[in-house]
Length: 289
Image 1: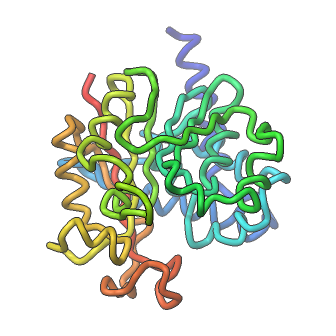
Image 2: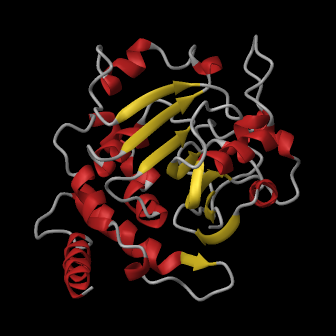
């Protein structure tokens, strides 16, 4: 037990050090440190006071992934808007985890997750087959490599959201970043992307007991119907919470790190006026043990 405590203390000290930007650090590193501090200040536990960073300090691993020299240039350009350091510090991601990334898109978060979980972990990069028209080789080859091996700890899944084809109780974490609204979007020539409630049920099925389900999306006006997701690509977070809880999840905490007071909920999220400046919610749910 004493040996375990000494190791834990050492890890905590390293993580707290990583949370601070080095002297003369580049702006991106300084921003990452500020995001994690902001997450610490703005994370709220369901029914409890604000959580301290010591409860969920994965900052050393995150900073190492963000500092890599082989990150794609276009990723670094949007870090300020997407705040990956703060989002992932909130999520509780650690080396060695198995992560299912729902609607990974072109893999902005996939790459960071891949390097955080490391060779003892695994990332499943999921996108519906209906998105193949958007995810062209020109977009995906720089991420995955023309041989598909650039991200060594990542496996690509092409499935609908409600049928992932993974073993039950096998994942430590499921993320769904900017994706829940897609359940109400029907790409041309398809029957949709799966059953909405079935997607939440599937996330619950593949998670280990005690595993986490981290959701983020663009906010719609309170009281908006779920079908708003197919129009403006937004969703009222109340719908997400209702479906997650119906699947069996328990809301553990939320964060306002991606909040924006200047967003216009009436605009499509791709409108240049709000593009990458939307008001976004961030929730973490837990599968009971």
